[in-house]
Length: 376
Image (cartoon, one colour):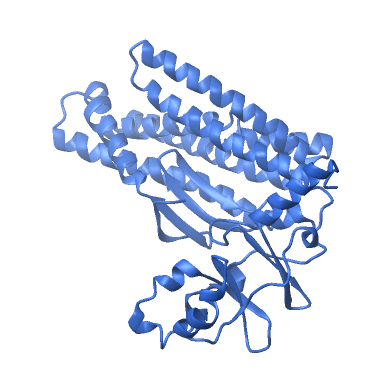
């Protein structure tokens, strides 16, 4: 996600934090310390309220992290690749590959809400128990607030709207019932768009009635509509490309460059003669080793271009989207991410035989439309 930085690892995958997280923590801390606690536990000092607010906000972010960690841990257990976990203003997101079975998709989807519900129940029980045993009002209220927040998070995430976890549950159930993954994805994404629209409407009604908090509901609804729309387009693309092989969309031959060249020599001999924004690299044996982006070459200081090898500034093959010529194109497209870029290296017997980009897929679809034939 743009605007996020890596802050560590969780269950073996990178953990990233968006710039909005400190803002979110500050808003939670302010709301709890300046508005909630003074009403629920009057008579304490401002310092006590401020400290309790910060602790409560930090605990809530920790519970959000556990929610996403549950998704990542279950995905890894189900042999699903996980790219990273990111915390941001609306909670968090776990980027992962597509599950290969409805059961795996269901398990990954429900793991997060169940974690939040369990945390909520434990925190509520601890809050009531602490108050009954010791009478410590402020810690008890913070725990109760944390419990109710997690219960709300768990229930809200179970709404049947993609990209919420409840929408993923609907996808998995429809997939299991129909046996058609793309059909299930289309139905669930339509439901997400409808739910997003309802949330936007409810938020605006709240604002018009004098509740500023309705703007947050509007923002959440718009986010759900946008993501659900993107997933609907992806599902439609998968349906249209059913039965199409990677070889039908790839461009060949491909301009490549030797990865042992210096950056300056690569620019002079290869890059300036290319019409592409990224070029595949090959090693001494002629096998693909990665992709170098021209903007990355341009960012290398002039003083370093004579000594730095181009492979040192390239995206290694292990981080590229790679597919075989006879592989389903829809399956290969799932490997594309922001890190790999919108391109698939087509490799056969260890040799680069072509490359498929977003433009190639679009051209394939346009040819099919003009000819009046199904891409299948």
